[in-house]
Length: 282
Image: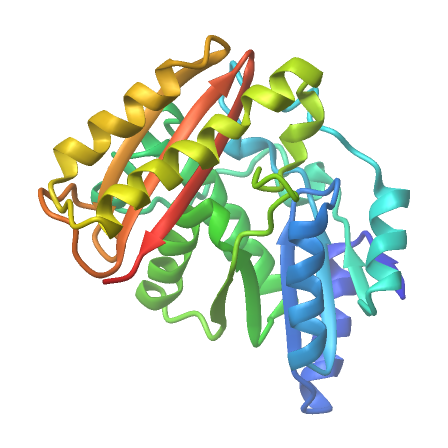
C-alpha cells in the first residue's frame, strides 16, 4: 500500500489504472477511521480491482464554532487500518494544495436539500462537502464511491450532485455500523466521557420508540415526533438540535409515514453533536 500526498501523483496513478481498465473503488474519509469506515473499505475491496481511501480533514465544511482544530487525527493509525483491509492507496493531500490561496470556486447544492436537518445549524457545510468531493472525484476518478447511511443527508445530496453534474461515479450507500449497545459509530464518540457515552444511547433508543409506534400502526408524523422528542428530553445531558421526519428523495417534511421515510436527528450530548437516523420501509 502507498500513501500519496501529491495531487499530481494521484492523478498519474489514476490515469494508469484507467488505461489498464481496472476499476477503482474510493472511500472518502476525514480520517480517524472507525468500524463504520472499515465496513466501507471492505465493501470497496470486495467489488473493485483497486481501492483508494482518501484521508483529508476538509476545513471548508466546518463552521467557525465547530471542532476542526480538535477533530482527531492519526494518519499512521489510519494507514495501518487501510493496509490491513487491503487498500491499495491512501490519498492524503495537503490542505494548501487542495485549497491554494487564490481558490475561489465552490460547488453549491440546491437549497431544497440543504435548508433542512443538518443544513439549518451548519450553514455552508454541504457546500464544503460537495466542493471537496467534486475535487476528489476529479483527482481519483473512481468508478464507485462508498458512503455510510449514518450521514443520510450527505448521501442523498452527493447522489444528486453526481447526477446533476454527470460525474462518472456510482454512489453506493452502506448500512450504519453500530456499537454493541446500538450507538452509531462516529469519530466524535471519542469526545464523550463515561457519563455522556451512556447518555448518547438516547438517540438510538428514541428512534426505536418511534419505530415501535409505526409498527403498531401509527402513521401521523406529528404524534411520532412528539414521542421521540419527549423521550430525548428525559435525558438531562441531551439537547436537541433537530428531530425530523422527511421523505428520502426530496427531504420534504411529511404528515404521514410512507415508504422511504427518514426519521433523522442531531442531538448534543454535552458539547458533542451526534447524529442518527432510520430509513422506514412500508
